[in-house]
Image (cartoon, rainbow, N blue to C red):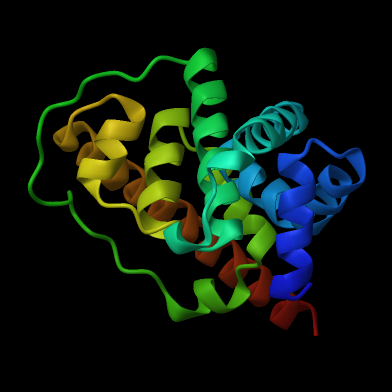
Length: 193
């Protein structure tokens, strides 16, 4: 959709026209679904977050201006906040002490990364504790800094750093485990041939 067509759709949404809302929904549905999948641990919560997010988009579309940035980024920011709010209602964030270094960084075999599929990585991320999952996604995937994350999640910056470190440590362990399982499978295949 070009800029002129998008402007017409936005104007239609501001006027609360169903056809325009449907066009906007269909334009961003798949990308926002994937974004919600990254933030939420339970598949059943994704439609709830998606619907709440689009409701906020349609309610607040009159406040969107091209000068503030890309419409997709504006919609994504709303979706992220809806996911965080939904996740927060599911679990409380806890305080953790400040850390400065990560604990015993374990090397990851290059073979583990070559054999890791996106679905596996998404599964590992979704298995993280909710707070660590949210911080990991906000920092590593969406590029927010710890001050912004702390403000969004109503936690301290040190708690945000702790959750990021914890998430990375857990993911590293899963990658190493995946690497070892893959090596065992290759050894077994070689032994059978």
